[in-house]
Image (cartoon, rainbow, N blue to C red; front, top):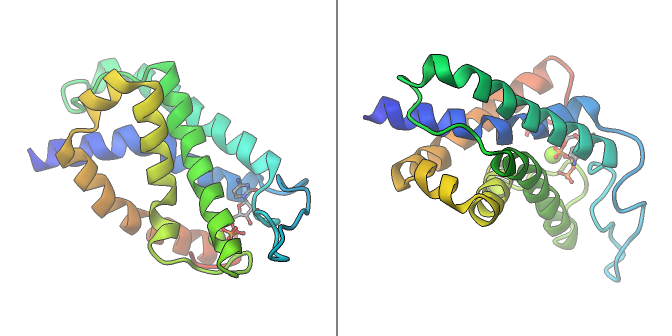
Length: 179
Ligand code: CTP
Ligand code: MG
């Protein structure tokens, strides 16, 4: 039961976990805010949110969902979840990126420079973005998949996975900060 819940949590969130990690690899080029600042004198989003990172990250998340759908027939005994509808694939990936972008907006408004840590928010911004947008665009699949125990598992496990992968990305020199 617990194992089943954890397996569904990780499986269903993989298309949301991948985008931000791929954005680290693919990021660069023109920032989304084009260098603009708001009245507070701070950047709207900052140089850490780029068009390329967002586009490639989203595409990677969608691709992961499509691959998982291909694998689904072979693991349906283990993963008790329906395949990803295309709307869910897109909203998990793009919603994750939007959540991260929204967090950068908040960070800049609270005076945190690009790359500064925002404990708690850094680990869950993309979860909130992915879940909220999927609840809106793929409601039926969302309710079937993200049961309360699955959501609890996601909220508990994601920060751990996030801290681990970012520490790893930092250790091998892919990321400038370990968060
Ligand atoms: N990245 C990107 N586009 C995004 C998200 C991330 O290009 N939408 C890339 C950027 O190169 C960024 C890196 O991935 O520097 C790490 O992402 P993140 O930690 O989210 O950004 P930070 O640079 O820490 O900036 P912020 O303080 O705004 O989070
Ligand atoms: Mg960061």
